[in-house]
Length: 201
Image 1 (cartoon, rainbow, N blue to C red):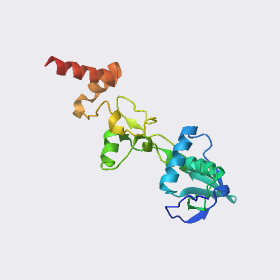
Image 2 (cartoon, rainbow, N blue to C red):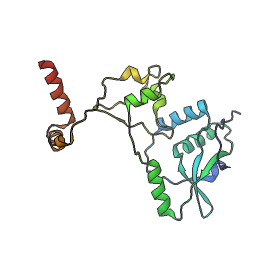
Image 3 (cartoon, rainbow, N blue to C red):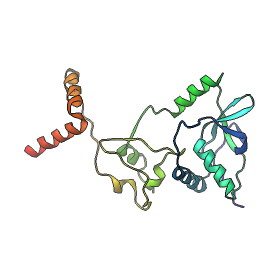
Image 4 (cartoon, rainbow, N blue to C red):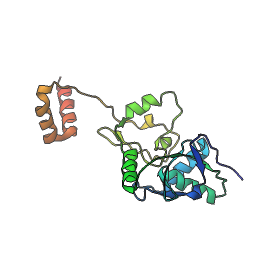
């Protein structure tokens, strides 16, 4: 029987049967998300501890719901899943636990295509592996969205880039004018205006 490799350490260990979902339907996941997580766990092992809140003797999973679902599926498929590392999170009641969970899942910064590529420079990274570890999608800002759920996993994300990002800095005195322009014609309109100006030169 094949056993899932454990590639991290925590404050303790629990069997997946002892862990209860706490997130509910907060984050959407489809069959493809779970399949990606199964592939990731099989390739890299269990690499990050579960975040657990213990309440009335019940081990609620704060972080790792997608991996928990994937591991349960792998166990059904015949894989041996050992007790896995966990980190314990303190919360005085369910309200505080939910507040902490929301903050755990909040995104206080954004990744651009360029920042991801710069960070991953030198890595043999394929688009399929750019899904977040717990089954979400990387939120890439920019004028065009990029669907990371490619069927052709031989290509890298660079093969799908069809735009570039640029940051413009204005003096404070022009703030209302620039924001007003954005409200009237939108970011796409500003881009089109800049392109037209460049063509007129």
